[in-house]
Image (tube, rainbow, N blue to C red; front, side, top):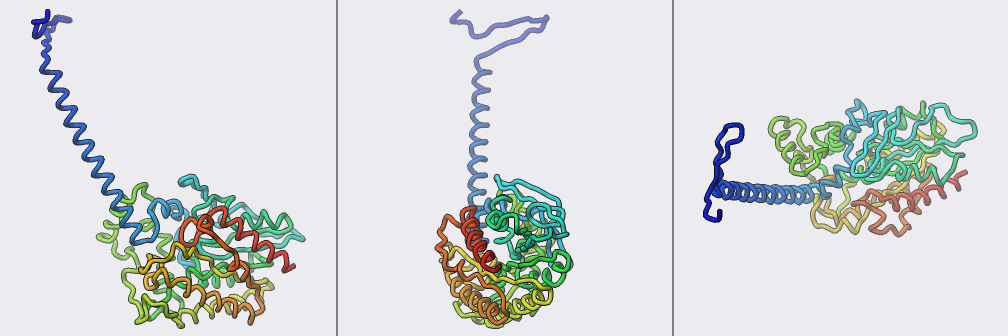
Amino acid sequence: MSRLKGFRLKPNGVQRTYSPMCGKTLYVRLHRALAVFSFLLIMSLSIEVACELAYRFHKGNWYLHDRRGSPRRMARLHPYLAACLIPSVSETRNGVRITHNSSGCRGKEFKLAKTPGQIRVVTLGGSSTYCVGVSDEQTWPQLLQDELGPRYQVINLAGPGYGSVEHLIQTALLFSEVQPDIALYYAGWNDAHVQHVKDLKADFSDYHGQLVMSIGLSGRQPAEVLASGYLLKRILFRRFFPMMDDVELHQVGTADKLTDRIDRRALGFWERNLRLTAELCKRQGVRAVFIPQILNYKALESDTPYGWFPFVRDRDLKKIMAAYHESMGKVAKEEGCGYVGEVCEVAFSDTDFIDMGHFSPDGNRRFARVLAKHISDLR
């Protein structure tokens, strides 16, 4: 039998032949297939890593982080606010649960009719008040509600990208229906990013407005699982849909761009918006409270700007934001509004942030406690 090189079988009358060469050929084919698969896998991983690094260099964040906080399928275009939240939706991304109620606000359902004896508090701001990157129960407006207790009702009116222009519109058009007693404005980050934009329009429509509008355009949101898929989509959009391309690529900076000088014109628009907002609150019997924006300056030490600030270096943001804080404090004093300067005295650490300026659950909790004390002292 040891000399037998092959054998024949005739099952069902069909003659079959087996040879050891068949097994060897199969082994070679499997080996080649495995080699091709390994090569393709390594190439795919290399491309994905390169795309992650490219996204990080351009946007300042890792793609997976931005995907987790993306308003994809959570926002849509709005005729006045550029973009707004889609009502009655809920999604979980990377373990983060984001819920919008039927009124198009992040958080639990609420009735427009106020409960007698209850103090209604509304929060206005951008993504750092909307609280991207954390689940519903970990947002600072919800934690503020927990701190204040049932005597108060906290409603989150924030939207990703919102700044003083959107706050002004919300105050003018929404307060008559929502009827808040206290309005908290956590702002500055989304207004300072127009620093050194050349010939900036007074309504911010040529830069900030278009960026906020892009939040409602699904093609520009990081919804793909991989960074390579997102960048491929952006290339296709740039080729076939240039009107939906990145707005900042078409902007021109002033002569002071990429310096630590303050753009007084842009700062003047910010101060004007705060004063108008304060006056609208007075007219409607609402107590306005301004809150200076807190950023993670340890993550902002680069000599280059990241995507949201096209003409301001990361390391200059601390000086820029200090000017906005000073302006906010001045307006609050002159207009008789509240000003929570205490938040600037809190020693927030790296663990209190998930990136350059959005709080982690721990950071939101510490922030909410400071606000709760200030609000309690108002009454």
